[in-house]
Length: 186
Image (cartoon, rainbow, N blue to C red; front, side, top):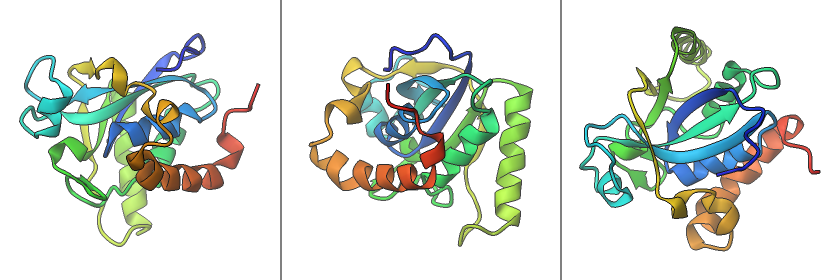
């Protein structure tokens, strides 16, 4: 989890496959104070990583993106979200398969719901993807933070095999596409 949360005062809860990937992307986005990996959308209280990965809890791996809407809007957050995962594959992102890897937007407010539904409809109508978007848009009930060793995973484990094979290419694509929206180095 990042420690620069003083400016963040709105939250987007997003699932787009493995939460390590979603967290890594949004940590580098200007206007994001911090990102926390966790679980949402299931029935079991306080699920563990093992329970979620086994597909037994109903939860999705998600990241809560804490951002300053004076710097970046919710719509822009969703534009990055849709550009950095495949919203057309049901319960799958690459080799990660199961409902825990579903594409999902958990909204907190009616405005977030409206924005999410609008952007899904716009992207579908523009036929930017080969297949229809299957991203679930649903109200956030409870967010459960993931275990500490899952927080800030990519930054702490860039040499790990999954990070090299899956996250590095995603980050390169993200950085290239959103170069003007990246955080400035201090």
